[in-house]
Length: 248
Image 1 (cartoon, rainbow, N blue to C red):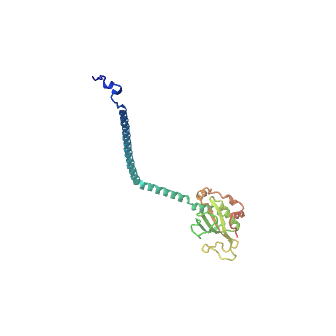
Image 2: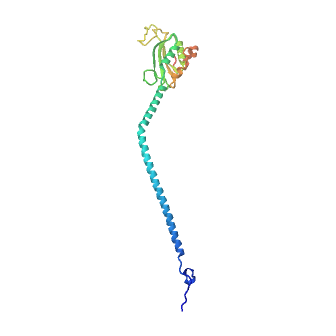
Image 3: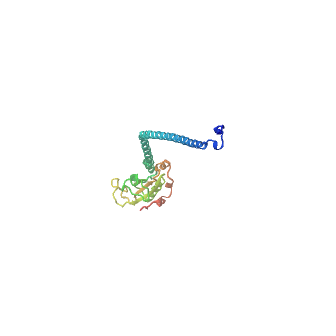
């Protein structure tokens, strides 16, 4: 007679116990877990990439809008630049102005009584070549006034130079020439360019009053209208010490 095993299959041990696949199940579950994680990572990456693409498109659209706005405002930018350039031009021109009227008044104020002027020529150095004598070492564009006239003596010429140097804003005074007339000469007039009248003791001079080129108008304005220059009270003969040429 054959024996019958009445123990349930899941409780049997030994050779009679059925085969189990518990390890394979765990392996399949692990693989499925890894696949699930990869799927989640892929989804998140795809979502992030999509968001970044949308952000890039939005930035490109904003950039195009900003470029269009900048192009529309370009005429106003150019207008502002032109306004700034014109302002600088006005400032430059205003800084280079020279008060010729004030300079002439100052020269007339310090002019000795015995001096007669034949001509007065004012200009900026180098603006009219050959019109007036050039002063060595003077800055280009410096205002200068050339005086031609007569006086009673060489001492009076020196006195005039001293007074001219005392004017505020004057850089220096250069004596170009100071010559006496010849006895028996004809009476000179403005038309002949000689104001000595043939008097050999009456010198005719040419001198250049050179003003500083930085702000001569402002410096000349500081001169007291009614005060005589201090240098005018000194020794007239000392006035020739600062000139490039002496009186002849």
